[in-house]
Structure formats: C-alpha cells, structure tokens
Figure 1: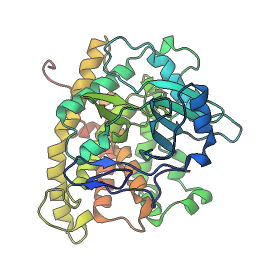
Figure 2: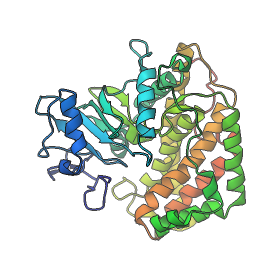
Figure 3: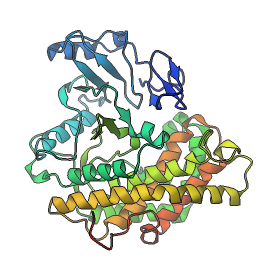
Figure 4: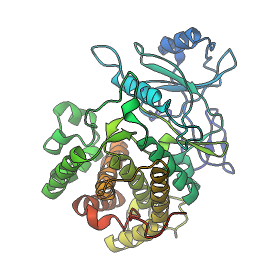
Length: 406
C-alpha cells in the first residue's frame, strides 16, 4: 500500500492541508490523507510498546511517498512520524536494516554536525515499522523548490550535510554494519529488456521512456562505464536515494531523512543526484503553469524544438548556481573533516546526474501515456551528461573552486 494514489494526492500550486483547506497565500505544502490505521495495527502496537500512546485517525496527515506513513500527535502527547517499509518474502526488511545501520553510524557524529536527522524513537524489525520525532511545520525540499525558496545558502547547507555524511567513520560502525552491496539503480539487466512482470506494471509513458534508454547503444555503454568507475572508486557512507523530498527545513535548520537505501557506496551518487534534481527541476519548471514565464503551452506542447531548448537553457543557467553552492558547501565540509574528494568524483557525479534525469523521467511518466516534448528534452540532457561527463562538470556547477572557499 502507498499513500500517493490518484485518489489521495493533492495539488501543489497552493497550500493544501489534509483537511482540504486551500490557502493560496500560504507556502506550497504537499499533504495527503493517510491510510486507515485499522489496516495497519502494527503501528499503534509499536507506539504502545514504546510508551508513546496511540494515534487516532482524526487529525493525521501523510507526506506521501512509496511507503505508508502517518504524522500526528499520540494520546501520550508525542509528535511522531511513523512509516512502514517493504518486508522481504522470507521475513525481515532490508530497507529497515539499512535505516538502522545509518542510525548506529550516525551516533558517531560530532556535536554541531551539519548532518541533522529527525530523532529515531524505535522500530519493529518484524513488522518493518519505524517511529521518528515529527518536526511540526517542516517543509520538504521539493516544496521549497516549487516556491523558489531552496536558495543558494540552503543548497550550501545541504552540501555541508552530505559532506558530513560522507565523512562518517564507517570503520567504527556498530552492528548492524552498513550494507556494501551495489545500489539497485540503474537496474542494469533492464537496459537490455524489461521483465514481463515489470512491463505489466508500467504505464505507456514509462515504457516509452525505457525505450529511449534501450534503443541507445551509447547510453547503455555509458551506464556500464559509470558502474565500472563506481566499483573502482573509494566508497563512503552514502544516502543513495537523495532527492529534494529527503530534505526538511524546520525552525531555520535543514534535516536529511529517509535512510532505507543507505549503504557504503560511491559518494558521487549523492552529489550527482542533487545536481540532477536541480537540472530536472529547471527543465520542467520553466514550462509549468504559473512558472513566471510568458504565457505558453505547458510541458512544451505547441513549441518548436528551438524554443524548448532556448527556454530550458535559460532556466538551467538560473539554477546552476545552486548546484555550485551545494558543491562548495560539500567541499568545505570535507576539508573541515580532514578529507578531500577523490580525483574522479566530480566527473562520476556528472554521470550520475545524467542517470538521475532518466530516473526522474521514468518516475514522472507513471501517469502518462506518452512522453511530452519537455520530457524528451530532459532525456536529451541526461544523455549529454552520460556521454560526456568530463566535459559537463563545469557546465553543471561542479568545477573545483579556483580560490579558497568562503
């Protein structure tokens, strides 16, 4: 079960709460109606074992995403965020195990670390449920980006947080140790053909997006080369699912959450994902209704190729400084930790930014029968980054600063 079905999702053009109150003067919020707790008795069972009281369905909200989740105040007066994750057929939950591995390692953060996470209150590994401190009024990075409020200083702060993550002492990890297996994306066997079960679950838009990859021998070769470079690179503690949604801003501070894909991996994955988020956002934002550009067709329909490229390039130039700010904050934090990025990290990050464009394209195509012109433009940018990562480093804002950082 997931909370982001077509029946429960809300629009993001204005603030919409779980109660359905639309207040256009307020910042963008993305809230959903959560799954009925009667269908998930393990939630209140865990809360009661932890001594936190129970949640009542009334007044709860959900933040959407791949997993069921509930946010609200318990009968014991605690503000909590509860989420379920996938359970393995043979029992247990690798996703929860990875999240708990992060919690153990994060205990080694020094005081004042820029890597902030909502407090973990307890988990049930059998039921695959985790309970965390709720940050009331927090806004996600995607909400901030939609309102053009994820500014350069906040991006620099995000870079510091990710730098602190990558500098965590993995050799001091307690049980459970961080996972060392390869990250699941991109799914390399799917570059040749999608499993029939997967085809049945995908929209026509997603199948069309996969064909863009599968019909391009150069993209396939570039993805294999990126995987090989990743395996040879120094590994570090990595989030491995870094998206705007994983950042929360609360009381003027930035938090990073959702650690179900945490593992020891190539740090270029996180750097490239953050850059890819901005590139994808920049590509789509300029064509979105109400984006501030001159009136024109949404998603690029009705525009010729040259106009799509012109508008997209202008948007990319406006957003690239935010990637640069993230990169500068990242390098500054590594320096404070006595670390330095390996020589090929920026180039691999550019490649992963290219994959991220395809990954986001595949996700957004879920509810579409065809790919719109802007989707194809996003795929073109991803292709360029994958095929020429070394030549794209400076273009997307990941060049090594020539002078001292501030």
